[in-house]
Amino acid sequence: MDARLLLDTARTIGLEFPGSVVDHPFGEDVPVLRVRDKIFALLFVDVHGRPGVNLKVEPQDGEAVKSMYPEVEPGYHMNKKHWVSVYPGETVTESVLRDLVLESYCLVVAGLPKKDRPVDPATFGRATEWEKEPGE
Image (cartoon, rainbow, N blue to C red; front, side):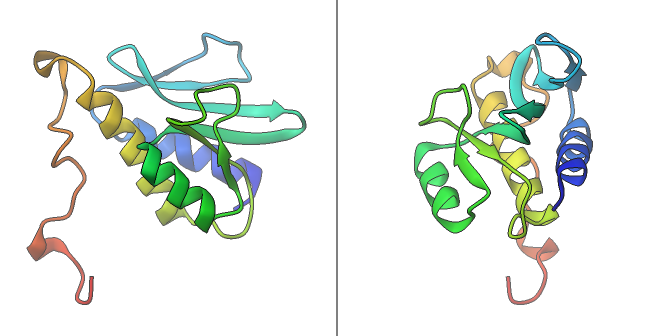
């Protein structure tokens, strides 16, 4: 996935989720996706010459995804245990990016007071048994 596609896809996916908005608190080159004022994705056009997307992860998931995809590194300028940075490259597909953005969104929503949650983070975006493709 090239740089433009990575950033555009992450933004498009993130804005599909209930309650998500985009703003630019760090400047026009750094769009931020939020849900109820909490950041779940930070898109950067040029950090040390590379564009990328920072996403929240569970620590064990972050370790796994970093070991599976060379484009995924510890979160740039973020808590390295709870955030990863996804950079352009060959192995991160749109499907993988969708899963990462969804997980980040759900983690942030889970941290909100129940009355402020736009969705149930335990079930949102998870395919039910009858919706799964054969073999999944």
